[in-house]
Image 1 (spheres, helix red, strand yellow):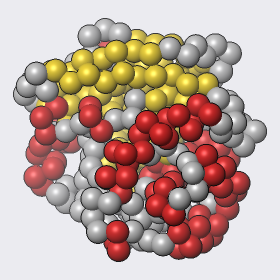
Image 2 (tube, rainbow, N blue to C red):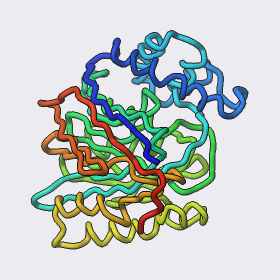
Image 3 (cartoon, rainbow, N blue to C red):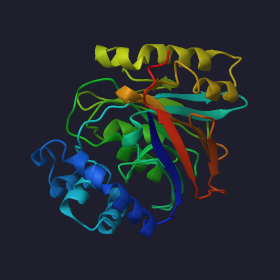
Length: 333
């Protein structure tokens, strides 16, 4: 059995009818997800607005625009804050690679295909151009801004859930308002998250960090170039075993530490086991590979079957890419 997912590239500098169309397309699924727990589990609109205003106030004008475009309903406005959303789990592998010839952030996004939004947005919502893989309509799974700052997220492999934001909106905030890795690190240290995530960041000066953030302890931000799905040690053994987080971390560490590794070799490794995974039945198959080049302002996407797309701030073509995933396949590696 195959699962189809159509990826779409959308260029709209300011929020407008294109974003509104995407909202109308995806809202029924997001509404079901947001209410997958009882509505009482979700914070009120006032709590969502106050949390955004306290932790990411610069985002408020954009948030208001998106709420208006979505119709201004209470429920959609609460979801668009991504404050204390339902818990969700991904896989993912990511690596920042910098040497004399290269500077690139590469990641695999491992998730159920039917739950991936599949939208690559080119925007300039706050005076800074951003190309990013959209999530939850307002958030970012991975992306780059015109200063070269590049980010990606991976689930942190812990069951803790608490008072904070979904990581995608934190990444959106970083791309909208930060230019450098130190600025991004400051945001990751202070903005609360509702779940454990590993966020890898790199910039045009080849400075990189991985931030291990969680709702129940301070962020650990270190100059580590690779991240998979655990934080320092294994805490959720069933997920670690299913996702092969240690195997993937070791593979990435060997690659980035090998003087013979080039950016081409690194990207190719993401297309093969153990980094590339086919366990779509358990929601841990690789949906896409993204490569971001901070110095060139290029975003590159690769999919199973050999399809790829090169985008940049100077050349962003609106198009679509039809991808089929074999959900009968068993886990690789």
